[in-house]
Amino acid sequence: TVDKRRQIPDRIVELMGEWGATHLFANMEYEVDELRREAKLVRTFADKGMSFEAVHDTCVVPPGQLQTGTGKQYAVYTPWYRSWMRHVHENPDRLELFDHPNKNPSSAKERFGNLFASEIPEEVPNKTLGAEEKKRFRALFPAGEHAARERLDKFCDSSISSYADRRNIPGDNGTSSLSMHLASGTISSRTCVRTARDRNKTKKLDGGNGGIQTWISEVAWRDFYKHVLVHWPYVCMNKPFKPEYANIEWSYEKDDFKAWCEGKTGFPIVDAAMRQMIHVGWMHNRCRMIVASFLCKDLLIDWRMGERFFMEHLVDGDFASNNGGWGFSASVGVDPQPYFRIFNPLLQSEKFDPDGEYIRKWVPELAGVKGKAIHDPYGRGAGPQVKKKGYPEPIVAHKDVRERALTEYKR
Image 1 (cartoon, rainbow, N blue to C red):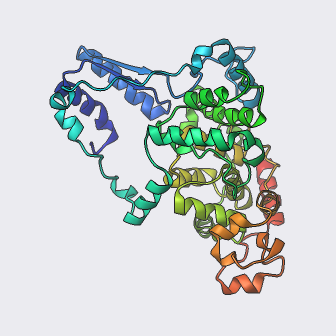
Image 2 (image 1 turned 180 degrees about the vertical axis):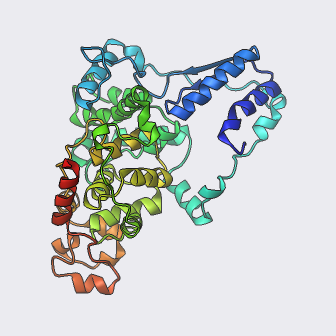
Image 3 (image 1 turned 30 degrees about the vertical axis):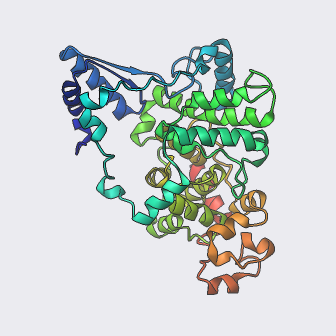
């Protein structure tokens, strides 16, 4: 390992010399710092008579392949997705899967003994997990390609057909839970789309089973946000996609942000989602939108603080998807919800967790609350009960702060 990222190219060159290798192939990463690293590797290798080739593989359709009728990059998902599907239909090789590599020759372990003997490095100091956390995460998210394929096949066998109906219910196990594998590269979007398509009765991505269609369209969002990242790299630089919202006067109220981070806002659906993320390193996508809207619109806290907190706590953290999701929720990104569309956490809770099962699971202080009071205990007569359990009152009044957000966005 190396102490600083800038040391990576030199260390790779050093290893190439140890192994007697002259050609290196790698999948391209599209974030700005990573592209700079790859560019340095290309130059360094060329100077030393070696070859470094970074290839497009993360996306089903490589960035730059899809353009509007005027030759521009799409900034809205729906027309982009139509173009994406059309491209895949016209270029079926985009979904061709590669055969597994052959086994290493018996001489490999002798020749590269140090490589085979290398242990997985420990976490960097500020990312160290406790023994209980390591055990929990290993059980929840088995690592490796085989585990990813097993999870994909299980999802396709049991849940994909009903995905469109179940995908927004956080208390239901209706999603694939493959995001951490997609983010870490233990499975590709191409494999996911191809496998799902082959379970359908048609090879058309916009035909057949509605659940399969919907799931493929959700996987495609990953391509979309990477295409956006490549064309507008300034989103990597702490800047909103929409410059007109660069001057919003965000709040940096530490107590409000702390309450959000710890799941102690007094809004049960928000608190349940945040506590789930802290405990298992993952959060349902519907809940990601709810808590992001709450932070940016109800608390008017800078969306970049939430974006960073997610990346520091999610096992499936992916810069392009995370940045795109926060841009959407804060109404500062591509294809955003209009600034005046502000999630009402109470209505979201009643719609997507109607019986409160998800809330009761993750907010034990509310486990004994009956009926609809689970969504708003202080407003529906359960205040004394939950106060004894230590559950906080709402830190803001949604109606009031909604008006505050609208005023600030209009300014």
